[in-house]
Length: 369
Image 1 (cartoon, rainbow, N blue to C red):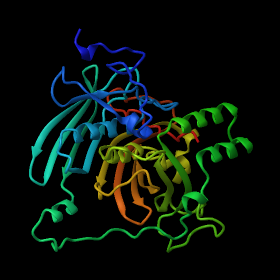
Image 2 (cartoon, one colour; image 1 turned 180 degrees about the vertical axis):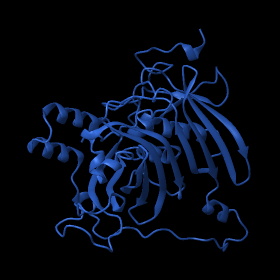
Image 3 (tube, one colour; image 1 turned 45 degrees about the vertical axis):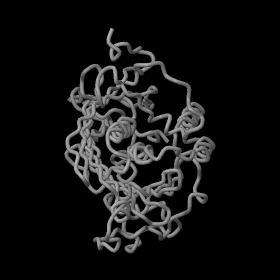
Image 4 (cartoon, rainbow, N blue to C red; image 1 turned 180 degrees about the horizontal axis):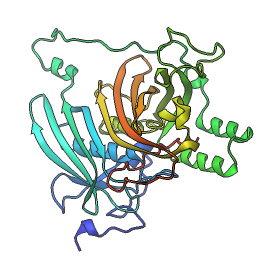
């Protein structure tokens, strides 16, 4: 029997899952890929079973986004870093079936390499991605005879006003304890929340929902976490800190790690800024596509605290658009992300029309907290 058919429905991997490598960060274990040379060149599979969030239609979307990027990275020289990736979710990913990542080499130039990746289960594409890699300016300048080369440079202003530091924010375990104590969740939900927190390769510190343009100051004076209810949803922004639970040993995993957490909390932003899309009112919420622009792929460190801002500038036609900015603590804009998703309110049509187009786990890891 061919190796790509020797999978077990209970394991979700083609080959036996190895023990966790305790010498590397949890995210490196999570993203690790196994090359399938016996099938063909530039084909990889997930080394470990992929996670399906509670209540999700399939595997967590960040898993397939990040592993697709990692698979593509494994086919380019180490001097190249990703600068953009454009993804489409096609079918929900089944956690009990291995994924095969097929990488196609589209272009190899001096400054840019282009790759397309198809993630397949049982021969069907569940996810497609096109990404581009480039040589960082620092590398070009170091190898150039003209180190004084001029380039255009600007970025948005880092939102320093009213931003609490990570150590001033509640940890996830603190949030779970508070919600349990105040009766907002029961013991079972608290246990599930702690289980999710323990398996997440990242730790988070929520700042809250504030105003996108603080100069207007349409906020309750007591806290920037509670914007005026009359503030339009498109003017609100959700902010939180995130970092890997352990230092990353292999630089190859840094940008895929950012891609992994970029799908966390993302499409759910619409429910945080618009009460019409609160969890108890939504019948279906799935991601349709995902785009990341890496602005500093050679300087990103996900094992240091990063500020994540998400906002929802538009919702209509049973779809919504969410936008994310990822900042380093020193104010460098590291990445910009966009995602469009379906948001269908409860009206008896849940699941209708989604057989051929749905996100692999559009519910985010923190969706139930």
